[in-house]
Image 1: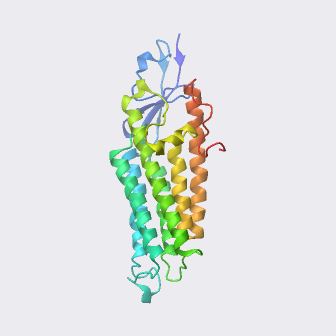
Image 2 (image 1 turned 90 degrees about the horizontal axis):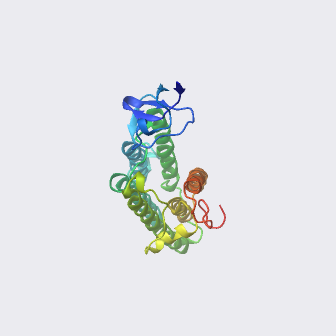
Image 3 (image 1 turned 135 degrees about the horizontal axis):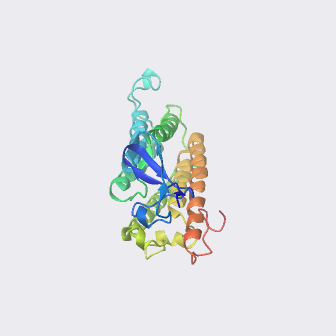
Length: 274
């Protein structure tokens, strides 16, 4: 008997083939071990030009890093000519630049040395859209934070310092979670298990949420918003929170489906709430 099926497998040059249940196959799965019988009809689809995930994230993160610095150093033609190559008299502007640069430098380092990507490629059209989002928002934030008419936060150094402490803690927490996830994936797909907290206090957030890396990421941008007291930063933080909540909920549901003993106390991204 002939069986029609659609098997999703990665092929060179952005081609995929699929099977009727619509389930993606892991890289280690073998066609002859799949429940498709002795004969199967394969359907292939060309997804167009693709790039590996490492190149995707490098492209997404290098742009914000460099574009922000262009505004910080006030290169000519961005602001009025009399402000070209000048510097802001407000220390918080320099601090914001340091924090922003650190954040994206950390992301680049994690992309190269820490992250292990489950899927091979991303369509080129999606990369262009993602880069436009990251690069565009970075330029928008930088324009206002480094603007000659920018005014410091209402509560001065007190507000900036508390926000800085929160920012550093969230960045450390985010990095700790990424290291934990890296070690978890080190066992390969056959040894899959859900992440658990360890001796590192930053990982204890795993007691309450499935994706603490997103929790810390949101926390870092909230603190950056407080530090700069800049409306565009707050808007960018809100959009990021919405997107990361969608990703976290999807990951949370996947954990529940895959692991019968998954902790019931955990939620997706905000402890005890969301």
